[in-house]
Length: 94
Image (tube, rainbow, N blue to C red):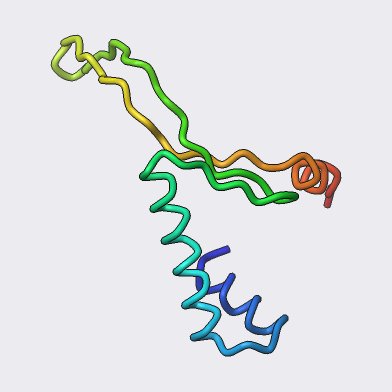
Protein backbone atom coordinates (compact mmCIF):
# COMPACT_ATOMS: atom_id res chain seq x y z
CA UNK A 1 0.00 0.00 0.00
CA UNK A 2 1.42 3.38 -0.99
CA UNK A 3 1.06 6.69 0.84
CA UNK A 4 -1.50 7.81 -1.74
CA UNK A 5 -3.54 4.66 -1.12
CA UNK A 6 -3.36 5.21 2.65
CA UNK A 7 -4.55 8.81 2.24
CA UNK A 8 -7.36 7.73 -0.08
CA UNK A 9 -8.52 4.95 2.28
CA UNK A 10 -8.53 7.26 5.31
CA UNK A 11 -10.39 9.95 3.35
CA UNK A 12 -13.03 7.43 2.23
CA UNK A 13 -13.51 5.97 5.72
CA UNK A 14 -13.68 9.30 7.56
CA UNK A 15 -15.27 11.57 4.97
CA UNK A 16 -12.43 14.09 5.41
CA UNK A 17 -10.98 15.79 2.32
CA UNK A 18 -7.97 14.04 0.78
CA UNK A 19 -5.82 17.17 1.00
CA UNK A 20 -6.49 17.47 4.75
CA UNK A 21 -5.68 13.79 5.29
CA UNK A 22 -2.50 14.16 3.22
CA UNK A 23 -1.42 17.13 5.35
CA UNK A 24 -1.98 15.14 8.56
CA UNK A 25 -0.13 12.07 7.25
CA UNK A 26 2.80 14.21 6.05
CA UNK A 27 3.00 16.03 9.40
CA UNK A 28 2.84 12.72 11.30
CA UNK A 29 5.78 11.39 9.30
CA UNK A 30 7.65 14.65 9.84
CA UNK A 31 7.14 14.53 13.62
CA UNK A 32 8.27 10.89 13.80
CA UNK A 33 11.35 11.65 11.69
CA UNK A 34 12.29 14.68 13.80
CA UNK A 35 11.86 12.73 17.04
CA UNK A 36 14.01 9.86 15.85
CA UNK A 37 16.65 12.26 14.53
CA UNK A 38 16.87 13.75 18.04
CA UNK A 39 17.21 10.25 19.52
CA UNK A 40 13.71 10.23 21.00
CA UNK A 41 11.52 7.15 20.47
CA UNK A 42 7.84 7.45 19.48
CA UNK A 43 5.39 5.13 21.28
CA UNK A 44 1.89 4.50 19.88
CA UNK A 45 0.04 2.31 22.40
CA UNK A 46 -1.63 -0.69 20.75
CA UNK A 47 0.15 -0.07 17.44
CA UNK A 48 3.90 -0.06 18.00
CA UNK A 49 7.03 1.99 18.58
CA UNK A 50 9.31 3.85 16.24
CA UNK A 51 12.71 3.44 17.89
CA UNK A 52 16.35 4.29 17.32
CA UNK A 53 18.62 1.25 17.26
CA UNK A 54 22.33 1.63 17.82
CA UNK A 55 24.66 -0.37 15.60
CA UNK A 56 28.16 -1.04 16.90
CA UNK A 57 31.29 -0.49 14.83
CA UNK A 58 32.17 -3.51 12.71
CA UNK A 59 34.53 -4.70 10.03
CA UNK A 60 33.17 -5.25 6.54
CA UNK A 61 34.67 -6.33 3.25
CA UNK A 62 34.60 -4.72 -0.17
CA UNK A 63 34.71 -7.87 -2.30
CA UNK A 64 35.22 -6.02 -5.58
CA UNK A 65 38.48 -4.45 -4.33
CA UNK A 66 39.29 -7.25 -1.86
CA UNK A 67 39.79 -4.78 0.99
CA UNK A 68 38.65 -4.52 4.59
CA UNK A 69 36.50 -1.55 5.57
CA UNK A 70 35.66 -0.30 9.05
CA UNK A 71 31.94 0.51 9.30
CA UNK A 72 31.56 3.10 12.08
CA UNK A 73 28.95 2.87 14.84
CA UNK A 74 25.68 4.46 13.78
CA UNK A 75 21.99 4.75 14.60
CA UNK A 76 19.18 3.37 12.45
CA UNK A 77 15.42 3.86 12.69
CA UNK A 78 13.29 0.79 13.36
CA UNK A 79 9.66 -0.11 14.01
CA UNK A 80 8.66 -2.52 16.75
CA UNK A 81 5.00 -3.58 16.50
CA UNK A 82 2.88 -3.91 19.64
CA UNK A 83 1.72 -7.37 20.74
CA UNK A 84 -1.94 -6.84 19.70
CA UNK A 85 -0.74 -5.70 16.27
CA UNK A 86 1.57 -8.72 15.97
CA UNK A 87 -1.23 -11.08 17.00
CA UNK A 88 -3.66 -9.58 14.47
CA UNK A 89 -1.16 -10.03 11.64
CA UNK A 90 -0.12 -13.49 12.79
CA UNK A 91 -3.68 -14.76 13.12
CA UNK A 92 -4.84 -13.40 9.75
CA UNK A 93 -4.47 -16.37 7.42
CA UNK A 94 -5.89 -15.93 3.95
